[in-house]
Amino acid sequence: MYQIDLSSGKPIYSQIIEQTESFILSGVLNKGEKLCSVRSLSISISVNPNTVARAYNELCLKGIIVSMAGKGFFVSENAKEIIMKNSYELFDSLRQTVKKMKKTGIKKEEILKEVEKIYLRGEEND
Amino acid sequence: MYQIDLSSGKPIYSQIIEQTESFILSGVLNKGEKLCSVRSLSISISVNPNTVARAYNELCLKGIIVSMAGKGFFVSENAKEIIMKNSYELFDSLRQTVKKMKKTGIKKEEILKEVEKIYLRGEEND
DNA sequence: TAACTGTACTAATAAGATTAGTACAGTTAG
DNA sequence: CTAACTGTACTAATCTTATTAGTACAGTTA
Image (cartoon, rainbow over all chains, first blue to last red; front, top):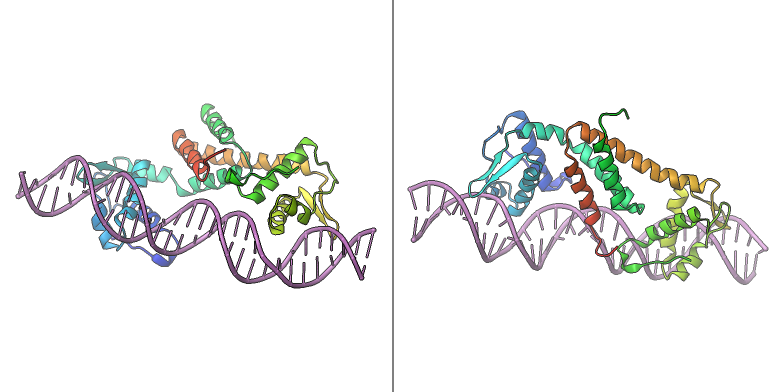
């Protein structure tokens, strides 16, 4: 199922995230279905459990999967929608910009204020 | 003049950039005026010449200072405008990205969290 | 020519991100 | 209750990248 490419340059945990999302979008994994357990996946791709856990936790934070104590992780109800909304590029672009701003000495508060402002007002043209 | 704080966590070269820009904005350094030479500044703040050179080169690339062969670096004609514009462009890029994220339904809190994360890294005191 | 200017190049070091080792605590199911 | 599972906490090793230093060089000025 999962296919990790060590020589790709991409960190393993993010490969897991990407592939999981792709499985969900393509219907290999459907809402409510259980994911491989942290340990079983870690064994099957020869990696430390924490590496898988890191990937699952990020997916969990986004709301794409949910944790059921003692049973494992399951695809959430609106996983597909969340994945489509959370497009990687946007967050990446955000990070790049914010990093630059930090480097330039812009205070965190200035950025937070700007974000708040945008979310306050209704639709607007760019 | 220049005041480097080794324990600030911020790299020396970017402290030099920030302070130079601040000197220009506040009128301590005016258009056409000569900056400290790479070597003299490197000595006065006890740092390698290349560290100062790196800062000056970045400022040069932005067009904030200009190099005159054999004479040194000088504050450019429109240094102030460039400094202000640069920060304008960063904020603009931020706004564009955040607007898109809002449009795709990403929650404000997710963005704030992401910004916080970036500002957490390597910042004990500030 | 002597005293300056910035720069090239490599190596050392520091900082950060990623992964592993290992042990733990909770839940489930027989 | 126990055995077999689940995820997680914590620290350390590792790998990668960013930053700074050492040093020598080439050009310009006066």
